[in-house]
Amino acid sequence: MKTSERIHSIVMLLTILSAIQIPSSAQDPVITPHGIPAGMSVPGYVILSNGDTLQGKIKWAMKYVENNPVEIKFTSENGASKSFNANEIKGFGNQFLIPSDDDSQASLSVMENYVSMPSFKKGVPVFMNRLIDGRIIVYQNRSAVVSSTMVTKSKITGINGITFTFSVAEGLYIGPALVRDVRIVRAESHSSSYFVIKEGAPMIKVEKDNYDSLFRTLFGDCAGLDQELAKNPDLAEFKNFYILAEIYNKICN
Image (cartoon, rainbow, N blue to C red; front, side):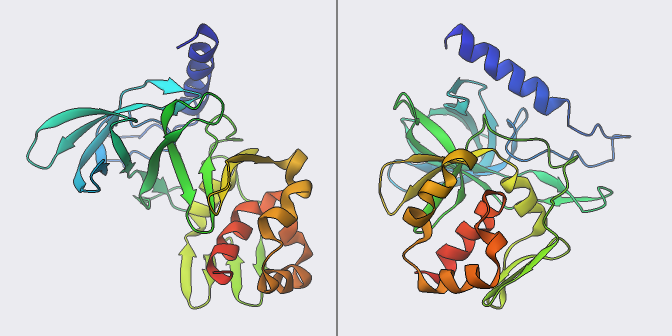
């Protein structure tokens, strides 16, 4: 790792750690902000190169390329441990505790999924955090997280669409099903940029400055989405990109 990358990783880690809420007693739950390194073993899984999935516990090795992890230590349910690099397995997932809306209780988050793939700039195998899967796949840019979800509150109060609703009190519903708990939307949507792949095309970096120019490429092939945008023009703003991508994948298959 180059000196500049090492310094950047240290700064990112210190910034994230400064936002972690320290438990008041040993019995209090450890609330971990979204996407930070698994410094201790947490529940998770690995997907081997042959497609087999193994359940156990995951711990990051704190080795990074472009701020993405490149190695993990996996401990199986029988206690056997093994380290895996990003070029050895298809991916892994880990699970953390996340805060409730009033930050007084915590519950297990949905599994965070990390996929082995070439990094955006160097093409080196890394594990990238896949936030959304579908026709549009959204990956977290770990260098672009705006702030911890524990101190940032969503500015979106609610959106009532034709086939979906979003509420800061309830989350994102598309059709009759809950697609994302509001805490997950809040955690995954506070970013200044994302890495995106649409239907197998080359990965692109989506951010506020290029969002308007990419909008029709990403979302312009779905009449159902056009109806949603006509009813809620604010849905087209970059701050709502995460929600719009979820809606697109559900109603534009």
